[in-house]
Length: 335
Ligand code: 13P
Ligand code: SF4
Image: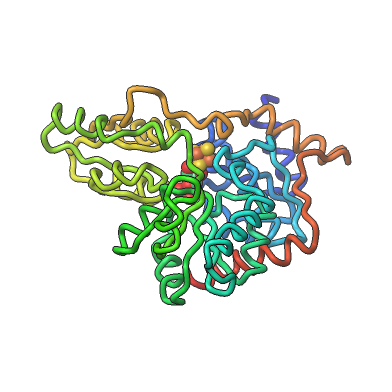
């Protein structure tokens, strides 16, 4: 039996659901029962009937399933981290709330909103303060809700998504550690200073390069890109929104896409010769941790589970789950 067949037979034996984020390697995506963006994966895996979820992605994604569905066993072939999620932890959260208080912002006037790319403890802090989670596909909707509360939004960890949302709604945004105290005090949206190192690779000069080369080229980017890049692009959207936007383009329209390499590469293959699809960067925008997971890892983690020696299983305290779930459930209600 080859590795794929061994995984398939373990899958049946364990009644497992294998899910993969779009940024995973092709071999993993091809084998998965379901592939999606972070919101779709959280919904699909947590509502599945299967007790065992094999999550091929980065840790915060597996944690989201455990938070929403604590009775499930969630195992990850690799406990890969998202470097952006690693930029904030619960102590940084507390420190920044204190910093805002020291600037005269009352705690009850702060509405915390965290991008799903954050660890479970940060989500728990947000949930305990009555805040909410968002993903790139529902960020606008959740942000509009947050604005309706007439509080100061503390957005974490992605300063780019936070500033993009603020500018999209004509609100004043600032960034902790970068903006002056006065700018922070006078802004509607205060962003934590986190970012995605992969989406930082796309620049306005890359867009200018392509626009000069192909007059009518369409530029598509993920909202984790810098606000200057999002402004200069024709469309910004989550992973799934990018896939559907590109798939619906008229034949022969050229498109340059500013997001993770595996996804763009797969789009190119899927698209056949319908459109010319370019990666919007001269360097390869590959998320190293998303790329860690191999088929061998998927097999190994499932075999160990079957042998009664599980590893890489997501475990969270009840307290953490309870508070983080408040923030995640609020997101699901709103989206
Ligand atoms: P999506 O919500 O679009 O899947 O994005 C997750 C992510 O990590 C993008 O870098
Ligand atoms: Fe995190 Fe960026 Fe990788 Fe997405 S692409 S998982 S935000 S490091």
